[in-house]
Length: 359
Image (tube, rainbow, N blue to C red; front, top):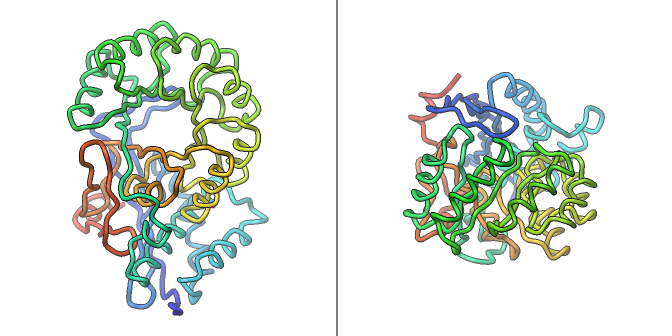
C-alpha cells in the first residue's frame, strides 16, 4: 500500500523546569522539543527530538526542514528507503549531532505513521517479544542533599519501582557517602544505578568503581568520555560491576564500536543519536549477537514499544521531569510498563500542552 507523504510539519516547544537538574557536566533548566508531524494517506505520525536550551534546537530544526522537503511525495510506508535517502543526503555534511537528531525525529514519526496505516501498535509490528518491561526511576540531581535524595528513591520504591538511578559528581568521598546512605536505607534487594555522566578519566573511573563495589550497583553508567571507546573498554574489563554506556554516542557505527571493542555490558542507545527507531533496531540486533542487553535513555513512550519488541530488552528509564507531550500517560503498574495497544505509538499529541509551550 503506497501512502505518499503530503507534508511534514515542525513545531518548536519549550519546557522550562520548575527546578534545575544538575548532572556532573551540566545543569539543565529547560528541555526544548522539536515536534514532527507527518501526514500521508489521511493519517498522521508524530515524532520528536530534544535539546537542552533553544540555541541547541535551532540547528536541529534547520536540518529537519531540508530533510522534510526532500521526503515530500515519497512513500511513507517504505521507511528503510526514506531512512537511507536521508542518511545519504547528509554524507557531505556529516550525519551527526543536529542532522542526526533531525533524521531520527522524522524516522520516529514515520514508524508511528506506518503503525496507523497498518492498524497495529508499534510493538506488534516489530514482533512483540513480551507484553511488559520493568522500569527504573531516574533522578538523583546533584542539587539534592542526602535526605532529599533518599526521599526521591523511596518515592519511586513506594510506586513499585525496583531500581533507582542517581548522579555521581560531588567528589568521591561524598559520592560514596550518598551511595552508602541509599544502600543502607533501601536494603539489599533494591537496585541502585550510579551515573558518572562522562566525568572521570580512566584511572579516576576505576578508582571510583572499586570504591562503589561494596554497595552492589546494578550498573555504573558512562564512567569516561563517551567517544573514548578504548578507555571505556579498559574500564569495563577491570571494573567490578557492569558498565552501561551508549546514550551519548552518535551514530550507529560509534555504538557498534562499543560492541566490537567489548566496551559495555549494557548498551543504552539514545533514539535521536542513532538514527531513530530504524537505527535503534539495528543496534539492538547487533547487541543481541554480542550477548548483551539494551536499555533505554529517555523517550519512555517509544522505548516501551522497543524494549517489549526485542528479546534482549532490559529495562525502561522513567524521568518524572521529562516533558509530557501526549494525552495518554504511560501505563506503569507494579514496577512494569505496558506498551499501548492503539495503532502506531498509541499516543495523541496534547493540543493544550502544545499551545502552552509553543515558541
